[in-house]
Image (cartoon, rainbow, N blue to C red; front, side, top):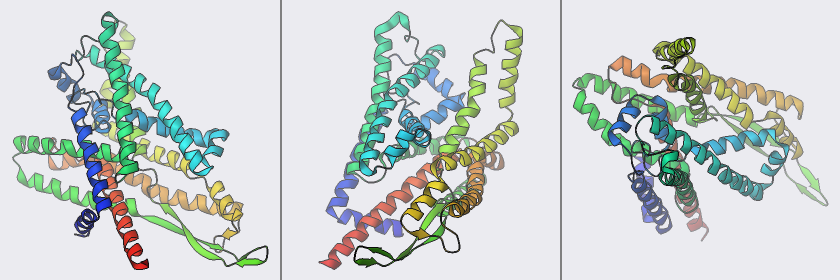
Length: 427
């Protein structure tokens, strides 16, 4: 009810109402583009390919449903997400970029510019990969060197579609509400939900199983909100400082360490790597070389084993959660910043002991976050087998994105409404 009141109050404020309407307008443009197909697409064959390929279904999630129709925005914002992940990792490994990231607004703008530039070649490479795969699958029969004009047009359209979505996302971030890229992915997931629900009711007659599925879904959403909002607050005290002839009193604050600071990135990494061997092996299952054919067939069969697939999936998600957290949170840097500004954690000496303390705390809470993400990752298969509802998959990644976007958007609306309340009080 509080969320509905916040949304209602936001429409009463003209500037917030304009931001919400602007965001809605950008999403309408995005959904329109998602329904404009590339030339020469065999839609019937495309549906057959999507039904038998899990990797394409994941890519379709981040394209907002554009890949399901092989539209002009079929790649979605996936190349931009990959570019952002690469730049995040490079910031921790290249000293020049690390120094640039510490230069405030100027540094962030330069890194964002590098991310946009890197998105172009990544979109082109991914466009080539998707187009070649679709051509071999019979979805794009006219793609290839023999039809150079159509081939170049398809690649240029796919690359431009990603850049348009990136631009729309930045416009939403700047002039609308919420993080634009996340909002676009959110719109694609929600846009596919009605069709999925209709298909489920057409083939599923066990309403008890559907009720159990819905109940589990509500409990999962509650658990995701609880974990996503969970944090360990490390208290920090600042001593009194003397500058010139003036004395500045100390103060206290805290460092919020989130239980799940990695978001859905470990799931994206894990499923991409996990599906790669079987995807590559499928190209060689019809090889004339006997040993290569046998090895490829064995790999494909092994990854079709549900128990093995879910076990590896869970393990990779846990590993990548620790890996990404280690890159994004560096205890030594945090400890140095606290010491530089005259702060200290009560009971902990500044410098190296502070870094070691923060490292231990982050490791402990990351264990809980990693196990949580691992369970969310394998949840669709577990819930589907438990209830017997296979058409309406309770996608862990989808729920994480939807819940995260809704929570963050409502926080922004509440913060802006609170700011207006203070402005009225001051006047």
